Length: 448
Image 1 (cartoon, rainbow, N blue to C red):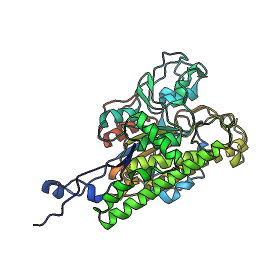
Image 2 (cartoon, one colour):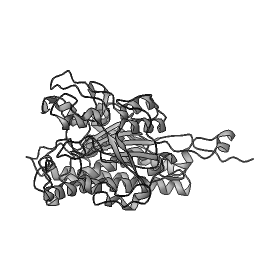
Image 3 (spheres, rainbow, N blue to C red):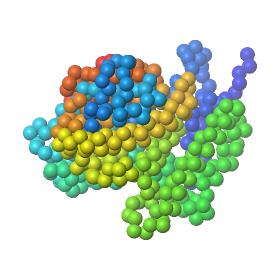
Image 4 (tube, helix red, strand yellow):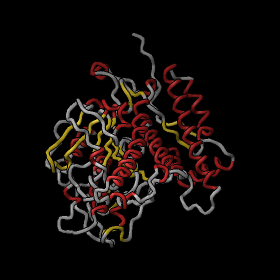
């Protein structure tokens, strides 16, 4: 029997100081044994990400009225309507350890610290911080070595690791949701250019810096450095894979150009103190980070990520939405209907950016479905009503089908005070990184 030879598996296009990760290409999958072929087709890996929003949500505009499959998305969630069948809206989940439990004020710091750890943060603004290991880092530790990066941490607010940010709680709690150890936060990267370089760098930091300087000096793209390798590879690919590679390289270049445009704009503003590469508009900043995360998943550079859209307690105004008051100030709305409408407008804005990310994942073919089909993306907060600092009945979405292990297209309501940590146990199990307990978990979450 004639067997079509396969190219030995490779994961990068390489050039001077550059390693451009490749998307999944049929031609590059390793040759399968007869037993593997009989068992079924190649199965793409599963990815997991956690997206954090600040200051809770206007829950009346978040929570669907009906449960099960027959539900309508309310005002805040409406931008996700095209992807309703790819979603689970989860109501009733709680983070008890974000409550004071005798520690007094500081709900925003506790919310951030507890979101992925489900542990009570030690109340301190000194060096003796302690909370717990977060779910993303539990997965990263167990999946280490399977991807170039065990995890990625993204954000739109530069991290702080010291100081008093909330009623005696360290800023480390307010600005970080990923914790490698109970006392070691994983600060998020906020500069799209630095994240881009990290994803596509090759060699030592000195070589990376030299290659970056050379590209910028001659206004060359990362693609220029891998072009020869790309041409050699394309000659060995089938028509479908050639088209997929062309589309991928185009997407990389477009993303690079957007970052370059942001840098040029910053160069024209010498008094603008944001780091190089951060766009002038908040919406574009969020979109760039989401697009880079999608690229990291598409190339299997990582399978675990976190993204903080804004730190809890953020008082950012949203004048482009007609909201000039600070977000945190508005969240203490005192049941003022106009203020609640503005909160809902901010919540919907964040959701619109997330919907574009979901659309991007949905549009990337992978295996017998899409990248979204093989992902599990948690979107939410550890505060529900910001006015009362509630930590029960949290705003939580789960997007993606988890490789066919999630029954999506439903609104599921759990009994009040169901630990959100139970959701994390269930996701870790689906990632092939099971643990017996995480924070205040009581067991895997049912009805997923």
